[in-house]
Length: 98
Figure 1: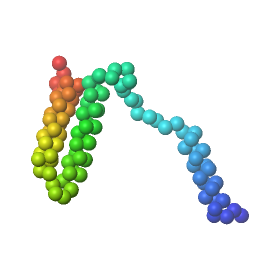
Figure 2 (figure 1 turned 60 degrees about the vertical axis):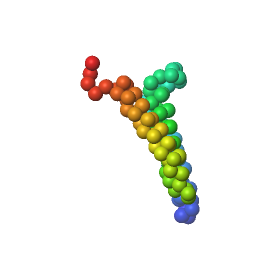
Figure 3 (figure 1 turned 180 degrees about the vertical axis):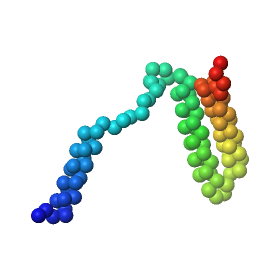
Figure 4 (figure 1 turned 135 degrees about the vertical axis):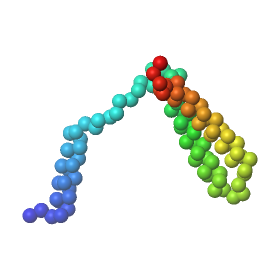
């Protein structure tokens, strides 16, 4: 009779072997390395910058004393990024076919 520890070890080894045998289905990735200035890459960069500004604004709002001028400037920059993202999304994926 095996102990509980041995059973857990056997289960672990079986799961490890099972998951290693099944290849993970990776989603298809666009080839962004071929063109460093592609619109798709620019869109990703803008979204990342927008998310960074969100985090920065949230952090600045928590700090005491609150710097209202800095928060207003950050929000204005975030809004400008959102507009750029929207324009680029329309270029890449228009609503109506041409």
